[in-house]
Length: 326
Image (cartoon, rainbow, N blue to C red):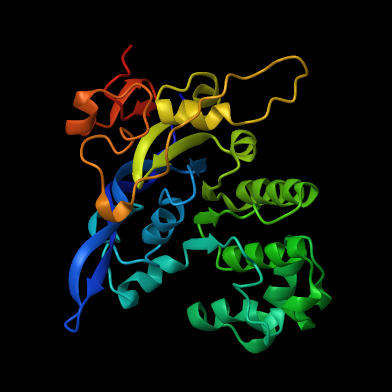
């Protein structure tokens, strides 16, 4: 009997608000609701894609999970232990196991610091290795991500964009983590380089037993990279399903609109485009009811007044929509 993967991360009703303050007393006048009640499980060894329009809360969600943004409400469990709301000191022991690969590799590196010194910092903070041991580890790490040991001496401006992202990946895996948030990790790269980086991520996932939260706006990349896909809209969950199931049988009207925008490479076959009216609502003035009702082509009075439940409509396929039924 084959055991099904267990949740590495359990996220329940997570909210992240940014206060809008005004006046001499800096009184909170409103809140920007960047993440609004997300509840999911991330399974061991999987790549969970997170997609949605710019401003839908994808990156804030990833940063909140890692503790880079303080949690407003909800619970986050990592390997059965509650980590939401922990202080930096208490969260330190979990940071070895939870890392992030950033969208802009150059901005995440110190331009005045050699690459080797940047990568050594993780070992200085979290281990008791001596300098010679740290340097040896870093050189091996560079080779593992497709660079050379002698690149230790170089500075960030001496590398291409793809090489800088390899350095970012090396930094993320330095302490042998089990969970990595890839925040638009390939979006700033050329297509050919994207393929190389994705191949490297898959290789490292196998050799290091990694679990990825893969945040991206590129639906084509997500389809061929991820095991399951979470669709977010205005900080809330819209749909979650295995990648093949989601792309073949989208249920939420927002998911259908997103997928209709993917170009079809097959000559003579056209995809019916779903055009959404208007822009994303202001998250500081969050809509009542379903957050998508202001743009939904099939919205009703119920959608405007009542927020839909997050429910499983078929095995492994979740959706938040009043109009979806089996």
